[in-house]
Image (cartoon, rainbow, N blue to C red; front, side):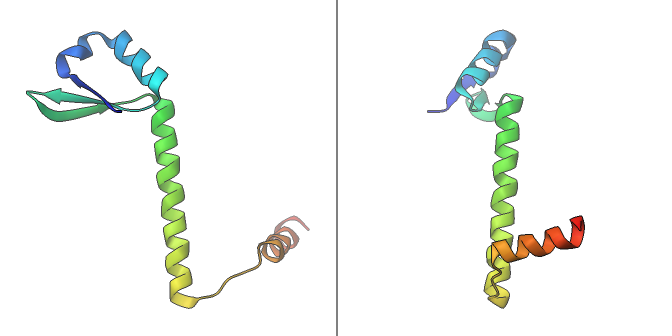
Length: 87
């Protein structure tokens, strides 16, 4: 369950930091009862970016397959790349 905190809680930066690292998820900060900020640890941010990049590459591959319907055998492709770049 996401943590939702008022902006005044940002005065206690150590507590916010501890919560972010312990829960490994973002904390949503409100201002006057409305969403205003999201605070998270660097580790959580990096995981989120990595997941987004992976999702983007998968979506791109699926679109490419839909377009031309061509699949390649992974072992053959990797062997060809090794021969090309390392031999």
